[in-house]
Image 1 (cartoon, rainbow, N blue to C red):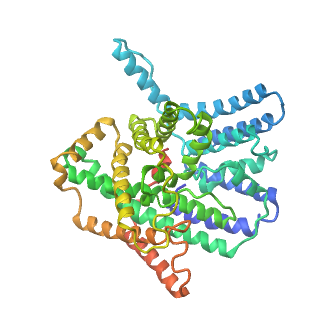
Image 2 (image 1 turned 180 degrees about the horizontal axis):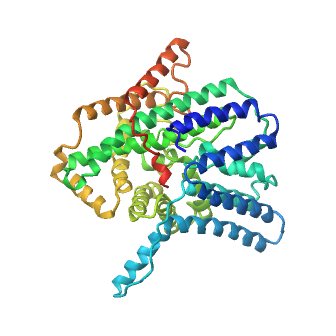
Image 3 (image 1 turned 90 degrees about the vertical axis):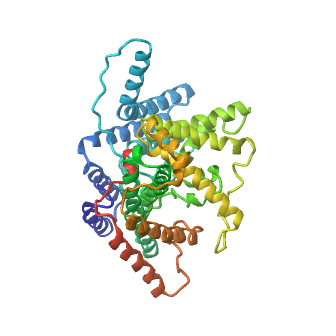
Length: 483
């Protein structure tokens, strides 16, 4: 079920009313209700894949309890291995089977042999990468004795399948979200208003910014072989805002929806396009995934300790595997590698943590130095998004070859010039709003907070008006559903 669908517009108000007025009194009844509606939400897409969600839930629930029983460290490791292997096998089969089969076939073909292994017509279950990582982190944290395992299957099942963040995150840690299923929630009007405000901004990001930029980006990249470099660069610009508006918009809607239910989810985006280097960008982009790889892969590998060779190895592995997490395609792997190569010089020179605070906090406009750094970093990120957006490495190389040629100063016919001007105007409004609100949890959290109520509501009405006027009518799905 999509957030931007009529189905959800009917589903959520009904869930909200039942949750607060019928099922909120008893914790077990409440968690049972959340589990059922979350399975309905996920099964709306394809009920067959509810089995995978249930298997992942039962395996990690059982392994969490089993890990806590023996004092023998080898047995505890063996149980952890079972949990990780079960989750990764399911994820690997549905997401990477055809990729590896194709790779083996190509390798044998180079050696003069044909490998007769058929690929499978698999449909990637929505959200499998997100909930798999979420359940794996639970068993790892239990193994590390950072959290106590739960014996309440209902609460654990509701935690794994919690519908606001089930299919595209944030990837929650059990230490943060699971205890909330054992708390008695009371309706908080202030939190609810805050949630509605964040949902409004999330829908504006998705329906106005992402979808309009997506129309233009698709029009350009679908004809990449006939477009000059200047037009392709413009396409990369629009795609950069499409993916940001789409994914961070989903996170805003998810966090706001959860807050309306009395739950607090972790922040997933922190104004990443105002970053001054690639290290800061990755601290601000898809925070739940970045911190997941940091805590469950980078640090166990040794982090930034040890020799320069080991530090380099750790960064390369984390970024490449992070790229591979996004999809079974060489473009994602190269995208991860390219990010690693930009990050490594900062690590070597110990400059990867020099930009920890918000740029020009408390100032109306950015300073010249920070403005230059933000623009250059955005340009680098934008160029890397071309790899992410391309279907093949060859397509990406063609686009890069034209951008880094004299044709970068040329434009081509691809779409209505009026649509481009309108979208650029909307982007100007969007970036200005994000900049003004960059010190909040989300852009409009504190907009006009100290002003008169009529001014705040005028601004909210403007957002609703712009959304109604410029929303793309196609109802496009969220980009990260495919991951």
